[in-house]
Length: 169
Image (cartoon, rainbow, N blue to C red; front, side, top):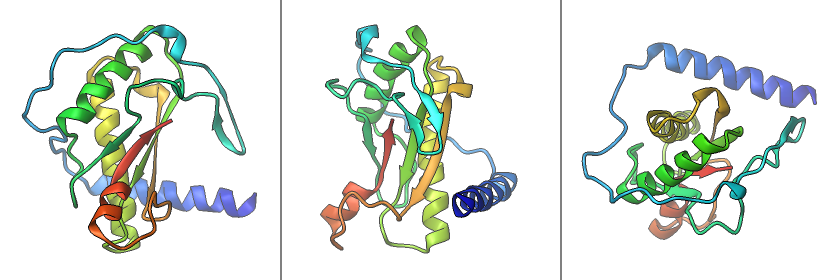
């Protein structure tokens, strides 16, 4: 428990220092996505936060709407597919506000510190888009795992592409 608190304290200090030195940049690209679709409100559930993290706060696992958003190498710009899926999630979250978590990830290339910052930028990119779509920003938690939680452990382009992601939970 103490190590976990220490870990969160160090992470919070690092992120505060990182955000203090960052300038504002545009995190969306200029291509347009199609119209928004609707998702039934019963696909969202509320949950609680505890020592194991947030539980029960994710969108319904049967949903056909993507909850993992992939990025290009060394980029934190949402592609049109990610923006389209996030629009659908935003519509659901506006109708049924619940706490969500955006987990940013990076591939193994780059330093650990750089990848933590890149995962954070990717998570913030998704958060900023959701807020722009009308979701209450106070309900969104962004966590960066950097390279520490890979979806694929192989060292090739296909695996790296799977690891450059944000997961909506």
